[in-house]
Image (tube, rainbow, N blue to C red):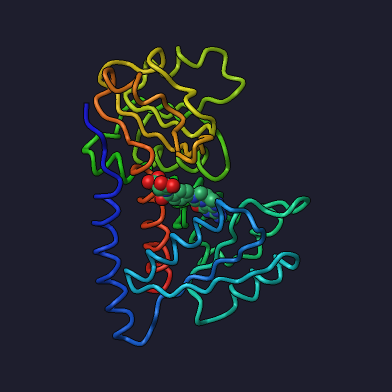
Length: 273
Ligand SMILES: Nc1nc(=O)c2c([nH]1)NC[C@@H]1CN(c3ccc(C(=O)N[C@@H](CCC(=O)O)C(=O)O)cc3)C=[N+]21
């Protein structure tokens, strides 16, 4: 059983971004990400600090914008600013505001978090687009582990617009045979226990256990569920699955750090165009 090291992969990605960002700065462009923060949510504040810290390390500038009400106009204004290359709005959003309604105001060329429905549509159509960084992290971790995706049976558990759906589209683009399971799936274990690769993005602690995983399968655990004692656990019961799976991503130290690195890679890519 291997733990797939997300921190090591993130460090490799960051080293490449730092080079690319340095080249852009030497040519007069500082890759810049604008993050709109619409609530006082504590987990959001942690994630923003973590992005800012990582961005400093790789030479990407971050502008944090506190805006609670006029989110659409704010995102449109940042999209029109030639000194801003990436625009994202943190979730959760204030009550009554839908992500789809405001994300349409992010220019797809600057939509580094893949939030605009146009970006998801372009992804589905096989056109160039930014995918949500978490969905990209799933594919990058599998690639780094050396998993062959062409022809592989991949079961994605979870169908959210931010992770499950875009992850399924990216895996399909890698020629995997993709099944998407969700809360109304008849028998989850029947589906997951025939998979070469299981991607868990349900958003509840320890939904997948020993009965769900085929011996030798590779498991990507996207969940980051806070525990009462201030810790973090995934959607997979890692202890139960470890003896069965060929490899699994740990939580923390798996998908999370790769997500942040890929978000910043998207900013550098956007600044290169
Ligand atoms: N528009 C938007 N896009 C997001 O991508 C987004 C968001 N809103 N809102 C909040 C969630 C959360 N999220 C995480 C990213 C990295 C870690 C991460 O790096 N966690 C570390 C350690 C955390 C710890 O130890 O406390 C790890 O897993 O190793 C966690 C959580 C992105 N989110």
